[in-house]
Length: 108
Image 1 (cartoon, rainbow, N blue to C red):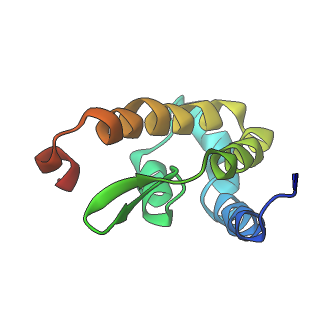
Image 2: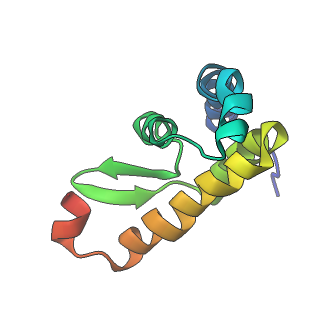
């Protein structure tokens, strides 16, 4: 068996680290003082495709779990709290939509 991490996941991981350096690190201490992660961060996560889902052929598709685990680990090394919040958005919000949402709701 080949247990190596696919090269496309490693490339995604490098791009995600760049994303975190731009959208998370400079603002983290202010967010902790405010006690909230701003909506703009989640919007940027979604626009970058970092939640583990993508819109493809007019359907929501789930990306591989290994990719999500690698990205979540990178975020958690910077901020466990922000990582849990982002994972909750993906695994509680988007997962429910993907599994149980109507086609009309998914298209919105």
